[in-house]
Length: 93
Picture 1 (tube, one colour):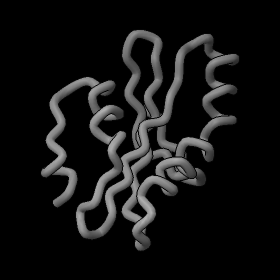
Picture 2: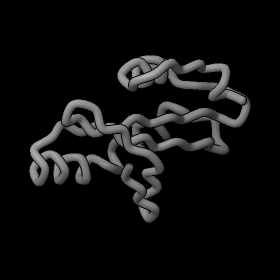
Picture 3: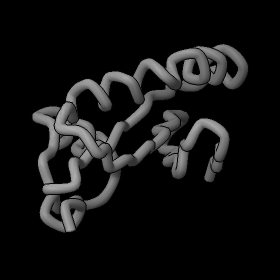
């Protein structure tokens, strides 16, 4: 498991030489899609470095849920790429 505290990566899943870095946040504003894009761009350099150094695939899975439970349209797609079962309702609690 990778724990990068200064850039807020909280969890990593390693499956078949693919690293999935999970970054979760609950923004105070309503722009969930903007926050999701910021998370992906924030770790772009780290992903490229991991791919070159370790010869693996890497991607960020942003989990952005607004305080009222609003999620982005892509959250289901991101979670479908991670192992296990995921209930959106459980994440929204």
